[in-house]
Image 1 (cartoon, helix red, strand yellow):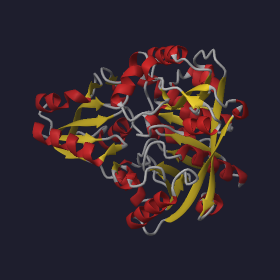
Image 2 (cartoon, rainbow, N blue to C red):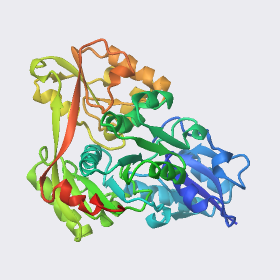
Image 3 (tube, one colour):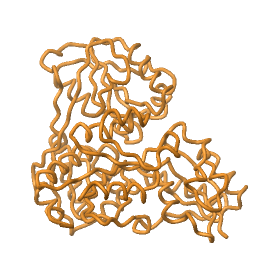
Image 4 (cartoon, helix red, strand yellow):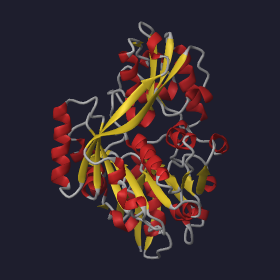
Length: 438
């Protein structure tokens, strides 16, 4: 029997175990390690989910303990199972694994994909924060316009009690409350719910898929970070970011996504120099010359923008985009500056884990990432907002943070929507799905 450890971040790691290793007597997963996301190490993958052979579940350790775990458990293979990591970082991790005496494994994507009875539109990306979510919402609107009944299945974010998150369904904002969803979960679920689309997520995606198929006639896989789809796509659309030219060649598993794409959409072309767009087009064409390439603008609007000139503004951006997504700022800073507001750098007033995030991600500009992976961090986010000396708060998180934290100063939300500006339009890109499965 081979001993395995799965390196992850509370998402693909659990999925890969469920699909590839659960119930197989020739392998034993002795541990998961956790990275990127706070408060997930020190838990266990519960026996109810781990299945036969794991009466105590599978322990989850901080990734820093991996070399010790390899030696202690005489580990044969370490499976790498999380996303949006630079090639340099992947190989540093691989070298540490090899030096500790284990093999380093990347699973074949097709081996981890479940097959649906319904057509599957997969929308993924080459980097976190590329603008995938607005494109998913626009795609869902097209499908509904054709009379289809789509639902969205989100990449997992099981940061709470895994037993309670096996299969989750969100059709209302009240469902988010009942599910004790973090800001990061709400950022992905809430815009779909407000548009009248039901969202499914969870831990065991065979069960998630079964539940989604019972309600929808098209499954829309809304990918997380730059991860690969968990379901075998009927149509695989991959988003690339014109503000980060070259990143489509430098991050795992974004390049793999690009190589299996049916269609590309380059986003933020309205904000990027034309030479950036052309660089991304050339790179995508080399990786996958058979896929079409369209271009997309992200139309940004700031409520109350006409009266904000000269105001000192605390800008709150989408959390993952600004942290491990590597962006110094996002739509919020752009919207605030275009309205003549004066951004206030919040880092001097950051509290607790928010201050730690600024230290861990020194690339962050004069903005506050909307971090709220738990109640304590949510309180620290609120305390930071209160402490920053500003006149207004600009909220570019997809979540209306005013529902979650107290914001005493005048606050204004930023919205952003996808608009195809060149190449095939969404109707043409999605045409293979229009009548599929009828």
